[in-house]
Image (cartoon, rainbow, N blue to C red; front, side):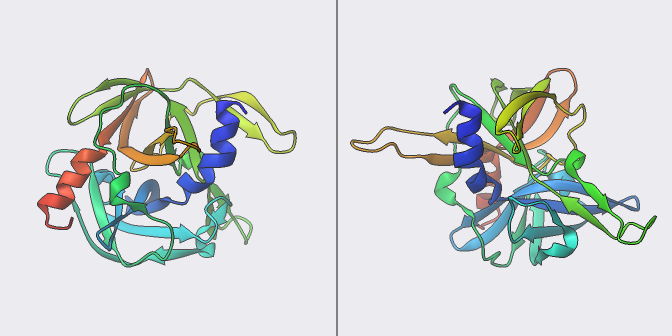
Length: 244
């Protein structure tokens, strides 16, 4: 099984379940961002980018995150509080129990990346579809999660820089094959999304699979880079606020 197929069939269904759309009202329009569900000592949080939650915000949850869903077919998560880092583009929403899968505190990876692919998961605007139940009138929107794989270029205490994909691969469910597809020039909506690592350490008898949250994506440029805040800084933020 090649790496793309393995990730798509074995790992993506789990990783998508941890990532939620973050909708924000700005300048009379709704902007789509992403967030990651984390359970810290029995308290429930959405890890995301600061610029995704600095205005009126709503977090929604699909009953089946693998299926495309309109906002009317989802459930809003109750937001208790929000805050963000003083200087970095990272923040959190504290929410009521989402009653669904969450990453645990021990899945927050504080180690530096040394090799291998990472996977970004979010809700890019290029996959948002308008729904007009009444012709000419927008009545709903349809959201879908997306993902892309890339490699680390540079890492500091405050920022991870990854290669910006030029050509991606897309799965054709009808034929069961992968084909090359140009990567969006402006993948808005991935901001606040997850940078995951999939580790497969060998045990004595079986191969264990570990999902680790490495960073929170917040920006990109169209030349060559995707930027993310190491999740260690997000964990420090919660600790400083007395939340973890």
